[in-house]
Length: 159
Image 1 (spheres, one colour):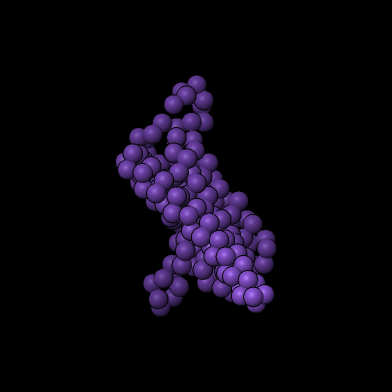
Image 2 (cartoon, rainbow, N blue to C red):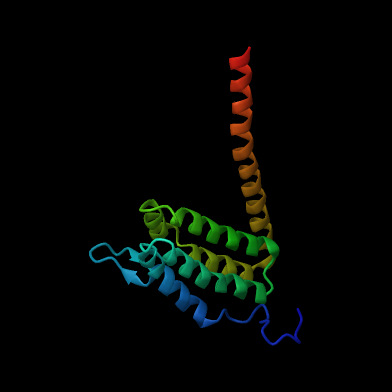
């Protein structure tokens, strides 16, 4: 770790309090009366088309920046970015995206990834690398299956 960089924090130091406050604000800050279920600013501002998701995604990137500054592995950072991408993409779908924001809580997931990495970097790196490989394989499968089916259908129809 480069100690000459004043922004870089050393692994083993406590995660700054602002990270938990940000997660509380974005994902868990308010209790839905009568349910005990918690929602945050992300789900509320997500009701505003376009701007809401853009604002919260930009805020959420600060946790990824923190992880990078703490020396988290590429697989941890990739997984954190994947959580944000999923949250942003599904969050952009009207109504469904707003309901998804209430349940998915990408910021809480990302803080937990960083906490797990801080406690056991080698184990976290292995688990996250396996997850990243599985996601890439799933994407390849999702792209391959429709193309293969289309080819088979065209072949069937032309024979």
